[in-house]
Amino acid sequence: MPAGWDHHAARMADETVRPESRWHGPLATTPRHLFVPRWWTSSRKNGAWGYELHDGPSDPDTWMNNAYDKNLSVITRVGPHHADHATPGTMVPESWPTSSSTLPDLVVTMYRHAVIADTNRILVTCGSGYGTALACRRLGADRVTSVDVDPYLIKAARERLADTGHHPQLEVGDLTGELPDTYDRIIATVSVPAIPATWLTALRPGGRLVTTLARTGLIITADKAADGGATGMVAREPAGFMSTRHGDDYPPAPDTTARWNTAKTAQGESVTTGRYPVMRVSSTWDVRSTLELTVPGIEHQYSKGPDGARTAYMLHPDGSWARAVATGPRDLPTVHQSGPRRLWDELDRIRTWLVIDGDLPISGATVRIDPDGTCHLARSGWTATISTG
Image 1 (cartoon, one colour):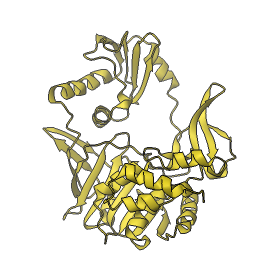
Image 2 (image 1 turned 180 degrees about the horizontal axis):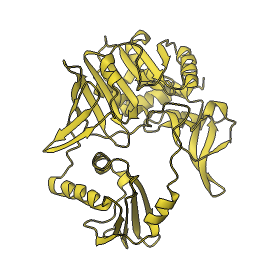
Image 3 (image 1 turned 90 degrees about the vertical axis):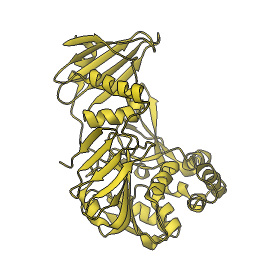
Image 4 (image 1 turned 60 degrees about the vertical axis):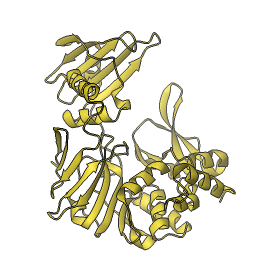
C-alpha cells in the first residue's frame, strides 16, 4: 500500500465533513485508492474523443490525487470495458461510463439524507465498493448489504473489502428487481427512471429510501408509509448518477444523426424571437429537471462560436426539434421550431416561472409514492407524476 495514503484520506475527510461528524472517521480511515487501482479519464487523441486508462501503482502521485479528491468520481468502467482488464495506455472509444467510484462528498450527502441510525440495516449500491466500505466502517459489515448487476464488480469489491477488513453481504442482482432481504434504509448511488415497487416492499415500517431520478438532478427522500407507499420530499441540492442498467452495457442508442441534422439546418415551421438569451440547459439542474418532467426525453446540444455566437438545439423522440441562435450572450435568439411540440416555448415557460418566483417548485417539492412506485411531486400549485409504466 502506498505510504502516506492515510494523510490524503485524513485531508479529504477534513475537507468533506466536520470533525465531529460520524462520517469523518470512515472517510479518514478507508483506503479509497484500493478500490480504484486503475481508472479511465476522458481524453482526446488523434482528433477523436475516448477514454484513456491509468494505472495507479505505476503513477502513485496521480493515483493518490485522484483517489482522495472529494469532488471526483473515478470512472472504472466504460461501456463493457473494465479498467481492471485493460492494458495501461489503452484508449477505448467514447461511450457511456457504466461504473465508477462516486465522489466521496456525494456518497456522504446521500448517506446523510438517509439519516442512518447505528442500529439500521441498510442496502446500498456497490460499484467499486468504496461507498460500501464507508457504510461498513460506520455501521459494521453485518448491517450492510450491497448490490450490483455486474458479477465482476461484486467479485472485485468482495476481495477489496476483505483487504480492508470488511465482509458485508454482497449480491449480484438488478437493483430494480426483487431485493434479497428487508432494510431500514435503501440508498441508491445510481439513478432510476421511477421508484421500483420492490423497494417499498423491502423497506421496513418507518424505513427510508434515498435515490436520484434518471435524466434529472433530483434527490428523492421518502419514508415508508402505513399504506405501503412512502412520503417525503425533493432535496434542495442536486445530484447526478449513472442510470441503472440491466445487462453488461446500456442498450445502443437509436441513430438520430438525420434528425439532428434537420434540427441544425432546417427552416422551422415556427420562427420567432425567444424571450431570454440562449442557455446551456444541460448545465442547470432545476430548469433541466423541470423540463424533463414536463416533456420527458428531450436531448440537448449547445455550441459557442469564437465570435461569441451561441446556439442551442433540442430534439425529442416524437420528432419535435428546436434551434435557438443568438449573436451574443445577452442577445435574444432567433428560434426555429418544428414537430408536434414547441420545445423552446416549453423551456421559456419554465424560465418565466423562474424569473417571476425566484425558484422552481421542483426544489423542495413534496413527494408521495404509491405502493406500485408511482411518484407524485407537488409544490406551489405545480404537480408532476412519474409513472412506473
